[in-house]
Image (cartoon, rainbow over all chains, first blue to last red; front, side, top):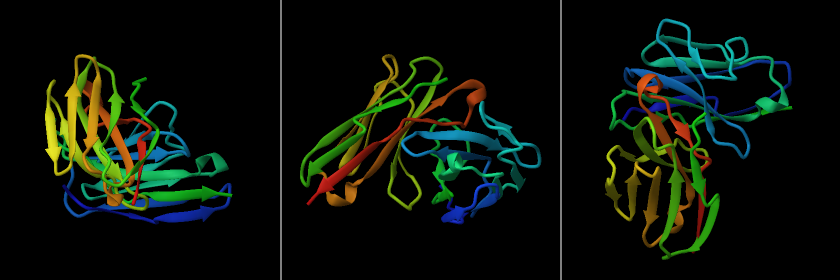
Length: 115
Length: 114
């Protein structure tokens, strides 16, 4: 697998502000994804980050709230915009080379608290 | 909406105990079933990726089985150690246009007491 460096590891933000989370992979990776884990909930897929084009969002998530960039095969960012306390979660980026027997690999997560 | 469920939600065992967790998932459009181990402030670590009905995989003291026809997988830990304390996640990978995406269960939080 590859190694993903995710930052920041944690942050406390004021409501109404935005935070950008970065993930750097140590090798080129086919697929990248962004997940969220709200308190007491499962890890939930936000979107698939597509290299050089707009991300593909899951139901319930929109680009205006969670803009995502992926300029190349090793880097992606997720912005949490106009934050509210409901956005307090762990955000996790993930990579995969695809294939049926291929495990996913993950960043260390960003623990976000919105006050 | 895919439904992946894990039980129990949490488990406290004594060092040396053996334990097991369950993951249930849809039996249709199955592509793969993943198990991950997630310690606080660390990246989730892959344990197994299972694809075939009847698969059994083992890594050290940890093993897993898969039944795709009835939609469940078991994870076993033999002789639990305090360092096994973590959240264990299973994730369902569907085929077709869902390629690459994972649907996670809520996880089982394991605490092993010395």
